[in-house]
Length: 284
Image (cartoon, rainbow, N blue to C red; front, side, top):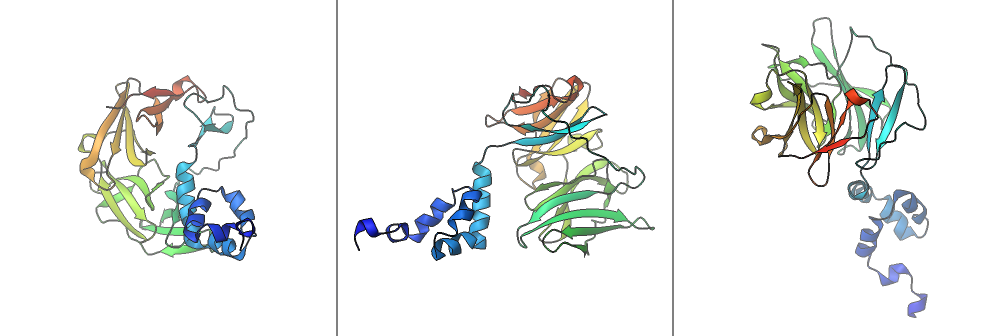
């Protein structure tokens, strides 16, 4: 066979084609499936899809979305770069909020890689104040009752009812059932369908108001006191001794958004309005 008549499959080994395709955008991969049976088989493989998602999402530009409001209107703002927040959004989308303050329930959203399924998880108390856990599967489009019990020493969730997804699990702030002091982070593993907990830094036990977030792929806590915003990060997942204080912002109204490539905190001061430019603060 002359070289000019050879196709890519004849020139490149399948392993190299696989590595090339991992770096092709998903919308282009969809069209490439119809080039040959070999390409269709490779691109349709479940392991390839998972590897492509993990690699492409990590390599793509980081954008951050957050909900802001002025008590009359609400909108989503996308933060592309450090100081690229528009002075005003191009469109405002009013979002109806249905709230029953007497019946708040903890909830979370995450991905179960072992079952290739996105799950909406929520907890609800019965008439005896015993918490039950249900989840909605986007794969089967149905509700699943989960036989998962809270750790005996745990009480319930505090005011931050939404859970944060990280490392295949959903995380909430919670408190001890004995003294109602905020002292732990409750974890629900989506693969194992089980609860566990990790301790907060002892310096923050009982502090209020305190909030849970994710910074740089790590669990983080921030709280306001004496016109200061303290930001703590757990450097090693599920290792309580790895909690460290990484930043003290000399104002009590800053919301940490993310950590830059230079390991600095990017935060917004909502006292100045939800669409003010974010600021960068050095970490210790």
